[in-house]
Length: 268
Image (cartoon, rainbow, N blue to C red; front, top):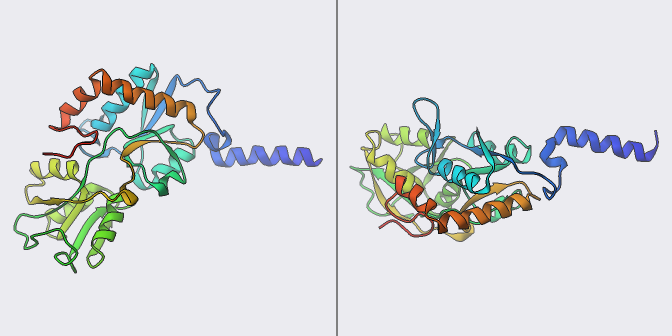
């Protein structure tokens, strides 16, 4: 077999192993008539499955609005959080719309659109907790729950190095543990925790305080994750984000879920 043929066979085998996404360096010639959206489906109110198994939430509604503006058909795929980026890179879907913060570490693996929202982190504790402030001294030796592979998990370790940080596959699991007295505190997005404590399940707890969003950890907001080289799709999404902000669609969607501007303002 000639050296040229060997290279051709190697390239074909590489594409087969790595999937269609890895085999394509850019999307300049792709007709984006359909876009597959990956989301977690376990992070209310941003993305979740209702009792009938239907995907709902702010992320889902924003994704649909963006696809409508781009005049493309959206299909949604649910994916466990810790496998989200590998699944995108492998071609299981074309974009991540799952409240993923744009961070330098993630940008080494995938690309991002401009932000479509940005809210601060917060810490919640049981209503009868003796913890009065969100400091490392006050939380020394305390067990703090957070979701694995998230910016909140990184921030918890950075802000509270003397605490015992417990990591969970989903937000629902850390909520269950603090509801049952197995954690001293939990850390997540202020919106996620605020919505939870309003529910029957979250009546055990209260927001202790919001926390500073260190840009080294939290990056520049929450964006849509894309495979490297998806420049055409990135521009389509970025243009659509601007458009739905301008025409009032964004506000209409956010008002279903929040009473403040999640694009950048902090809750009042």
